Image (cartoon, rainbow, N blue to C red):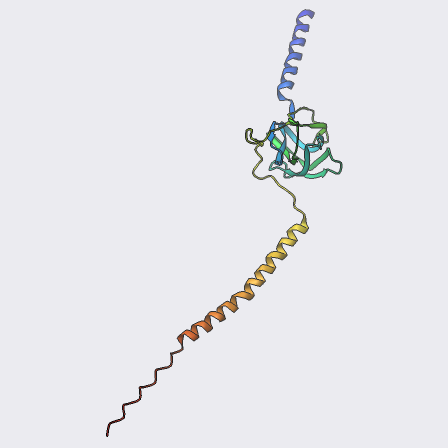
Length: 229
């Protein structure tokens, strides 16, 4: 009897292990290819998650090869607020949080834009590493995950074309408010200039039209011949 109970216990333990292996959350960066001088979007993706409400990522990258430009949320993570700390070259800290958790399968949580530096002599890859990760649900409980990172492949000139991962159509980039205000002022000035120029052109056209409508002076009648005596 005890022998049968032990067998069932081992069998159930194996089922639980297999089930957890299949349903484990995985955080990964797919393989990306780029040439020197390219600006490439590198997505950090997650394959399966439920109630994701908090994210903290610490990434390490080769600052001799890559220069960080900006980070963009995706359609799935748009409800979450995000903060990016890039003060130290080679290290990137991304924190995202929201009051309500999100669910999904195989989607990008953030897209990181990097500039691939030029004059890379013998560099074949740009190293990117997820040094630290913390995922939490809306109950402030940790979500365990596996990590898989593929390096950025550096293509030489004349080789195959750059292959960038597909970035979601609605990736959201936060623009500085000063930049938006400056664009509005420029558009307002251009509109004012156009309004001032149009009446002048109209008046000029009107004057030209009036001048053209003026009748030409009629030719004087020829002097009649003096009758001969």
